[in-house]
Length: 478
Image 1 (spheres, rainbow, N blue to C red):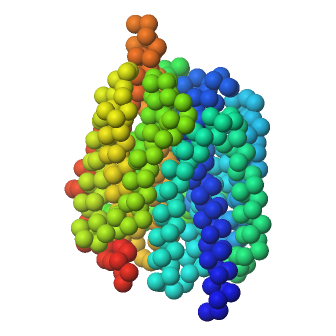
Image 2: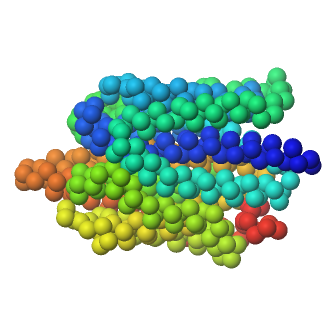
Image 3: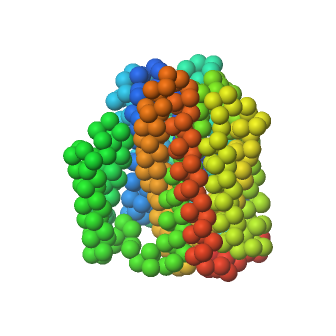
């Protein structure tokens, strides 16, 4: 390979990483700015969850469809289109002056982000067909994505403190424009797909609509009542749409989500554990930021720094330590132990008092959550792909990523709704900070229970011995 070609494809890889990093940053940078957004646009606590969930729903709902569109119409084209859509939506978020405008723009951001994430890994695989170089590239990619959490919380705190929350979105515009320009110049054009391939539009529409109705019903349950006609009607409608989705997937020749995947034990267990874990982890990011700002009085920058230990630990595990543990112990015990550490960290947050002290009440929980998430992330992805054929590994990865996003969206909606209800009960005593803290503590207890259940399922049901290290010491499913 010529030096020029070598340099061009590593530059293309760098641009792909920048595009995906922008998506990852946006999912964490917003958490630190939530209280500022809340006071600026007048969100209620239950309504504020839509700033996160509008993004997560469209992101998770369109991951599988985005990957399929890339197969049909070209990954380079879809990546460029997703970056363009995400950048335009970021501009709309930055200019938003109402709750509705921000939520709609966030939903469009999620759609663009889904397309980018769905095709980025496939493009990297295309750029590096040599196994040894591909392993190195994927290691760099994983480290950058894990480091994105640290960068996001720090950047969110810095920008919100120095300017205002609008700029956490506006900063995406020059980055997105640069990524788009270089993408069109460096990435090779795709070969056209066979005309016989078809798009499962019905599957994408039904599953996304089902989850939207479910989230809307759960978020509104606090005000309307869990047994009200509105809540029950929305949840029944969501269930019917999900049933329709499963019927479509069972009958269509080229389904969005082949149901046969779930006959494989590790795939099923990894996805169930992923849903439970994501519910707990999204609640951690969302509610701990609110606890530190609204109960302890931290500023946005201080909140960003409080998240730093957990994110540094996660990055270290993602870069090297997790692979070494899997190589030595397999996937079952690192996954189960990591989820147990995460559950313990959430349980520590559940006892954090109104007058909490960082070193005593936040740092130990953050450390355990960082260790747990860092240990469990790679094993759960490997478990989700360990029993599938190599040709279906991308699909299996897309399915588990979708499970993460949907579990996070549903779990966050439920936990925030329950926290708001608990806060309203305690508010009668007259201490707003104590009432907020009581709501957060309840949510952390339930989140810890979800992570503990995921740990138990993984320890009991994940098949061991299905992962082997390749020649470079990186675990690979077989």
